Picture: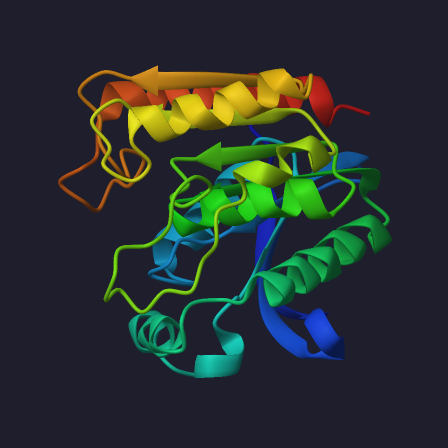
Amino acid sequence: MTFDMKAETTTITGHGGDEIEAYLAQPLGGGPYGGVVVIHHMPGYDRSSKEIARRFAAEGYVALMPHLHYREGAGASPDDAAAASRAAGGVPDERLVGDVDGAIRRIKSLPSSNGKVATIGYCSGGRQSFLAGISLPLDACVDCYGAFVVGTPPEGSGLQMTPLVDRAKDLSCPLLGLFGAEDKSPTPDQVAQLEKALVEHGKTYEFHSYPGAGHAFFNVDRDSYRPEAAIDGWGKINDFFGRYLAS
């Protein structure tokens, strides 16, 4: 079933009480609907990320995407805001958690919310979705090829990210991980290390790895796009959210 939906730019109260921009897409009708916080990739709060939010609304979820680079580039193009954020070392983990928490609170305040919320992120957002899952009470989270959950950024990248795998014991919800078997960040070995930690701590998870796919295989605007992997991945996401976000 596909839902009619509406989408709009709004503001939310994020980390430290900051008012930041966000993109809200939601089905038309009373609901109640589960909620999805969409965590955009490093290239930023861009057209393709907003399309993902609208896709979730069409699937019957309230989707809210905070503008994680708003403080570095309010009013700037997504490319310029992302460049400014990268130059500053990336989005600080504490700030990310505060902004996602603000998005969760906003979703739950809506009359159409059923009170259940998940996160999903792609690339750097995959790591940040996992970070949200180990830092906040969630009903589900999805990590799409999140780099540096295991391992650290290459020297000279300027990114200030620490590994999160040692905090797997804190995961508050079921986790879905979607990875490319040809990815260099995260590598299959790094995915295996994360899986080992989840098993050790008795966490509920499911991982899927796609042969012939590398990083960003969901992104239709890149040469890395792999239609078969992306179509199957969307099916896995829909099934996962159907299990954990239903009223």
